[in-house]
Length: 220
Ligand SMILES: [Zn+2]
Image (cartoon, rainbow, N blue to C red; front, side):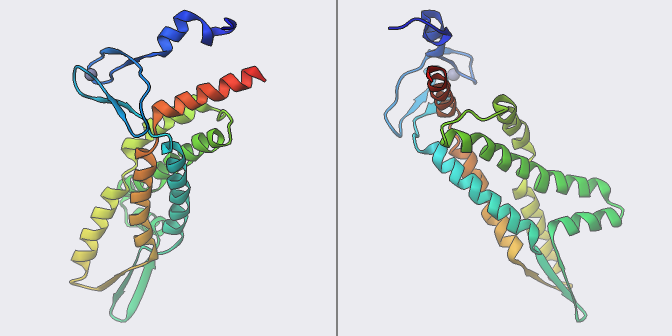
């Protein structure tokens, strides 16, 4: 076996075949799994990694679907409110703008960040990471994009916005006719699609793919 390069030294190979449980810090040896199998920590039962060879492809498909749904959800009105013969449709960004005009800038920022900015960053980071890997390339700014996903995740809260919106629609219906528009359905589908993109993103398999790509790049 050739012994050139850091990847093939015995010490580095030993380190590469170890994994630390992120729940209880136990150091464990990485084992090869059958497709669909999962490795759990022997001490606390935490799932360490799964073998879903198709996971990254599924994650990319759901991320691209999320991007399309995100565009539709923000380009079209969410609800149409009718009262005394007048009707009014509003998109998410228009609603944010109206909140600022109504003197509620903090709520406007909260809605903008949790429902627009963070989901957008999450979708873009996923595509940015997964598309090059799919094409057999190392994504530029790899570690930054990977950190961004973890940073953004707790702040992307479309579901909270949806809950608030549904409560508002139900309450408003007593005073005015409120009918859901195309963007509302898109937001619901976006919520599901983005969750599936994140769930299918197998970080362990992703880094394995990156290592394989880097090795083939070095070999060229
Ligand atoms: Zn553990």
